[in-house]
Image 1 (cartoon, rainbow, N blue to C red):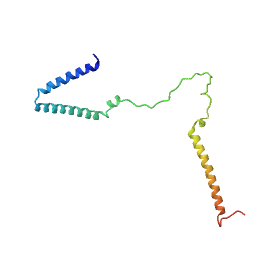
Image 2: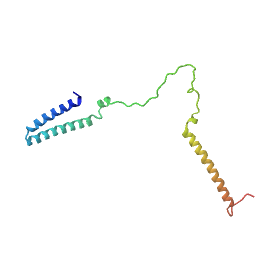
Image 3: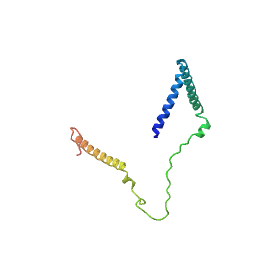
Image 4: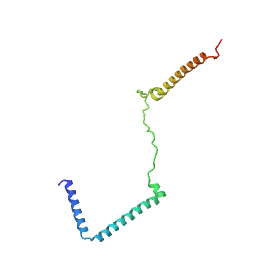
Length: 135
């Protein structure tokens, strides 16, 4: 018998028993059972909520909580031999840092643009009427 069929049979058995129990109750008794169950669940919920809040800051609770540690760098074991591979050669890290290269190129471009603007400004001020010129 597959597992699904067994679960269905258990569910149908449980449903039949529940209907038998509830069928024997009068409507007033059903309401009382529902209210009693609701009261028990509300009291349990409030107990767990307030006991958790009350014990939250206590030392005994702090000991049970996990501590957060910072991630440490992994220390690799290296042979003391003088064997070099391509990772051991000194590398110019600035060549690998593309963001720095882009920033340097942008600053060089900005300097050249500013020089061009300054030259244009000098030309316009020399050509203006009444501007002082070199003799």
